[in-house]
Length: 110
Image (cartoon, rainbow, N blue to C red; front, side):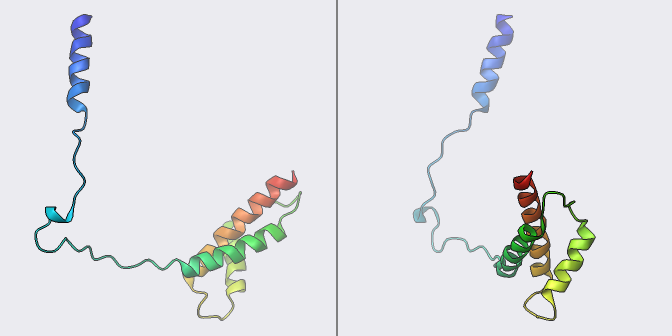
């Protein structure tokens, strides 16, 4: 029994991470590495989400059943209209916001 505890203690001690110092500019002679990453545009998604959330809160009532995703997607298409700024990301944000607003309001009214 004590041998098992000793082995377990040694195994746990060996698994402990060793502390490392934070990297500084001196660690990179010359120039630090450059990471090329494209910026992610969330502006249209966020705008759609906010608008859909408002519509979802307004549409929910005490007896309202949560609409199907397909129906919400059709509502998002109708809300987008012909505006080119309301692209696929905006519509996805609108649908997500609508469902979350609907759920939030439905839970409050129960």
